[in-house]
Amino acid sequence: MREFTRALPTEVEVLGRTIEGMTLHWDRAYTVSDDNGTTFYLEGWRPGAFTKGLRATGNVHEVRIDHRDVRVGRVAFHESVEGLPFTATIDETPEGDAALEHARAGHFHGVSLRYASDQQRRDAEGVMWRLRGVARELSLIDNGRPQYGPDARIIAVRALWVSEPTDEEREHARAVEALLARSAANLARELP
Image (cartoon, rainbow, N blue to C red):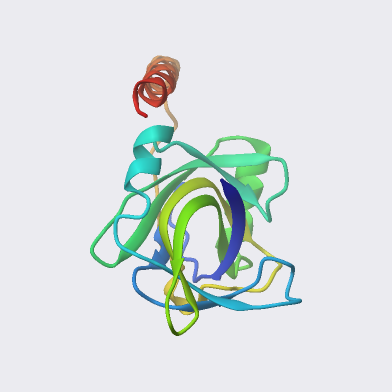
């Protein structure tokens, strides 16, 4: 399965630690490049392209900044009538806090989807329609050229809680996160 990276423009409104937005829209042709802008072609997505991949991965993916090898959060995608929205939760780490401050200052101008695709078809107009994809990560983009146009954007950032959590609440959250991780691993083994 070949892996791709797409940078997308975005608007940021920071209200808390949960970022919601749109990754891409269905049935639209975007001008993209796989070689840093040397050559370009048209790419689009058909509805339902991520359904199988989201189930197989347990729909838990990393959030990074400019695809650097540092996680700043986790993201889940879901398919809607319009396209592929996402919900990202930013980690309570120094890197995550810095990413939120950067977002609050309005410095992120895009998001980038890293995905793999093994099923596509080129139509008579030359558009490469992706029929199946597996999301790998979502990066908040400070640099880079947007490829999916103004369709992809951050819609809102919401607070996870209004006050500092207690030690008991933190322990409960860790237990739930561990359960979700085990469930995702088990789900990935059971699906073809």
